Image (tube, rainbow, N blue to C red; front, top):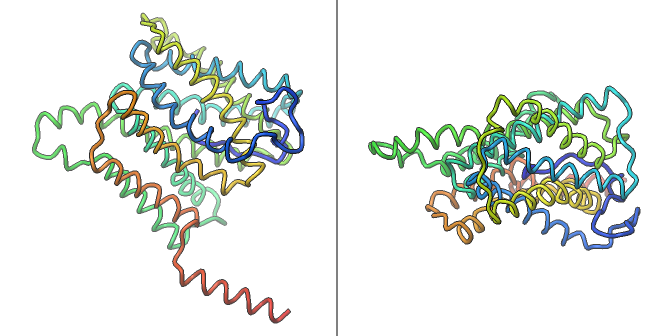
Length: 344
């Protein structure tokens, strides 16, 4: 999956699948290593997808990664003796969320990989927190965006436009021809991240995260998405000829086992050790890794507008999440807090 993070709970402290005998209270591997590994794997996922579509169609790529991811997560459930979700209503909501977080978006990203560099897809994936904030503010009235956070969303939107670089297609017939393919691919990436956002908000609204184990929820989401897409695959070209190479096979295994399996388990541990705010900062790592790997491994060219747009997107995320705020507001808040403390 995404290449983006799921909503987690404190029960995930015991879900470290990287050791033979997991410690149910504290992971043995330092949290910062798990954080870095998660960011790297999710950033590299777009490289694996790009390699995969060289010999597989988008549906074949997605089914491969979901199959390997499901096997990995089920094994993690077995080793850690994590109970499955038994409440039918909760299970239904988790399956719906899985369709939007591991079904539609993974297929859209795989389709877009046929027309876009892997680094561009990685940058678009980073817009997930912005879209989540927008949808949350619409669905949950108590979480309306203030002026500063709204400005952050606008800065992020400017970053997206900068990455696309629409001025490159003005007055150039050949460039416009290229955009006829790239344009829908850009929209597919935005559609994928919108699906991620919908899933996060849906889970928050309809699933009790205090009583639902995060590993069990992730496993159900990935495995149910695999089953749904497998059923729909005859209608979407699953029987088309494939061309396998060593690179494609290795990429699919890594994409499924690590990008759709281990990375989610590791992110659970980061969330448990650092809290959701610091854990969400993995969003800042994935696009950087994606762009660098695209250049080094695939020789993808990078125009000036792409890193500039990426910086604008990341700045917009930081502003919208409240990680960056005007100094005056911070000082005023500190002053009020000090006054209240002195009155006590």
